[in-house]
Length: 211
Picture 1 (cartoon, rainbow, N blue to C red):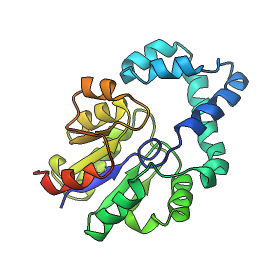
Picture 2 (cartoon, rainbow, N blue to C red):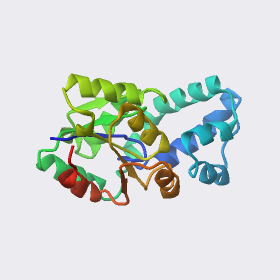
Picture 3 (cartoon, rainbow, N blue to C red):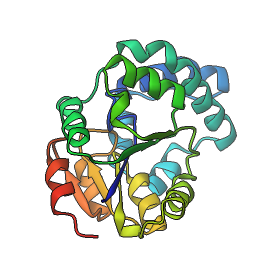
Picture 4 (cartoon, rainbow, N blue to C red):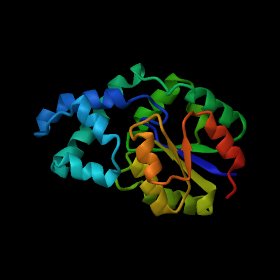
């Protein structure tokens, strides 16, 4: 059976607005400018490499800011909701015996709190948190080795162009969801294996995917 591995923020949890607001509040403490709505809208339409060139800020304070946001996000978790239709889709997949996990740059504890609140914890076999911005492909490769899978037997589900790039480096199929950070246009430009406009479409992908 195919292993389905999900990103968390923007893919399962509707958390992007909270993350942007918190980043803007904390950014001046790290000598970084806040992002306007226009800035965020423009960034969503870029590939990861284009995004990194466009923001043009020092990486060290940026990564420190992101770590701080991850820590402080825990207080916001009780106020976050799943993406519409996502909870039902995950429950259906779980009832069908689908093996699922989460691989995210957020903390595993934040994810567990969210899943517990929304009664989704039993749907996932594992949660791998604190993945670095460049480290997802390495972790995906490790999952393949540990579970004796072929690369085609793991599908990564994510909302950003960097999720597509990480999946490509790991040699696995990727289902790019259009309700998260990256726009549909940006995702399609990066040629994912699947483009997903509604969570329920994952049911068909799992059923028809042939490793």
